Amino acid sequence: MIKGKKIILGITGSIAAYKAALIVRLLIKAGAEVKVIMTTSASNFIAPLTLSTLSKNQVLSELSENETWANHVALGRWADIMLLAPLSCNTLAKMANGICDNLLLAVYLSATCPVVVAPAMDEDMWIHQSTKQNINKLLSFGNHLIPVNNGELASGLSGQGRMAEPEEIIAWLEKFFLCKQELIGKRVLITAGPTHEQIDPVRFIGNHSTGKMGIALAKECMARGASVSLVLGPTAEAVPAGMEVIRVTSAREMLDACLTIFPQTDIAIMCAAVADFSPVTASAQKIKKLNDNITIELTQTPDILKTLGGLKNDGQFLVGFALETDNEKEHALQKLRKKNADLIILNSLRDQGAGFGKETNKITIFDQGENEYKFETKLKSAVATDIVNTILKVYHV
Ligand code: CTP
Image (tube, rainbow, N blue to C red; front, side, top):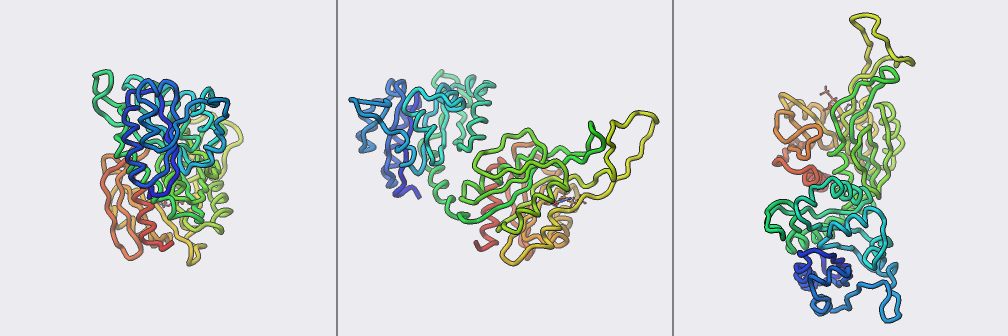
């Protein structure tokens, strides 16, 4: 619901800046209040007069104009969201590094509202390692990204890097404002990533989980207004700002963190690939190769989902995952019952596009009434949206 929302549109120097006129037009038509801030190079691509006429507001670009200081702090607090479209490679790099050499960057650095960027650049720039790192940095600061499209580029080449179309940007904002309300006031606990069970100071038992699915879920819940606690096993994945992150290594540490948070939790989603077995004793010294064979006695790790299932009260909602390779539905339903979960999300390793480290996932969700919610293979961010939508359907917030 864009109607009545206050939006800062930051425009930077890119050929796609001409499309900003349509973005302003669509926002105004949808009932938003829009203030445009441009960088100097953006005005080489589109006239400020076009944007001030369409937005019905003065277009700002300098930190001070006619001896008047543009109050960037007030601007950053005024807005419900700050949208940068198009975001050039140059401004992206400055945002990632905290550089503040124009009004737009000063507003960005002092903004208390959510920030979303719609990058636009040539494919070679878009796939450059430094651009990738800068985008990851922005996401780790808690900013949002409207992905680029594949298509015709200003260079005449075709590929990735084309700014999302104005209609897609408006649709993203619509969804953002619509979604935002649903989990306000709710506390969500999410486990993600693998656990490592120590064998000796240099070795451990673990698995291939990267935590991508759990992190996507944490972002989705946060975007919908929840206060999120993410209990995260060892992973190199970037974690977004704006949520509580508790780093753990072993299943026991993960359980302890969950037990502390669970009593204040409304919804708990157990997404972690917890190692199932742990050495009975971890050796204090590196184990030497004295024999050809070695026996390590293993014991089962605590089942976190099952433990929380035993503690759950009527107001709490518990979601588990089931990673299966055969008899998928039967095994998933068994886990749902055994662990007293409200929903179980089935991943089958037989499905292409599902599994550890992938950008996509394919899921089927079962509730306690054995209703089945089936989804196609999607990016993990879209899978997270489907999961939260299903939770909201079954759990009446
Ligand atoms: N889980 C957990 N603690 C464990 C093991 C699993 O909390 N020690 C949770 C997972 O986070 C997931 C669900 O239980 O939500 C199912 O995990 P999965 O690995 O599919 O199954 P397991 O219970 O480990 O059973 P099995 O390995 O025999 O399939």
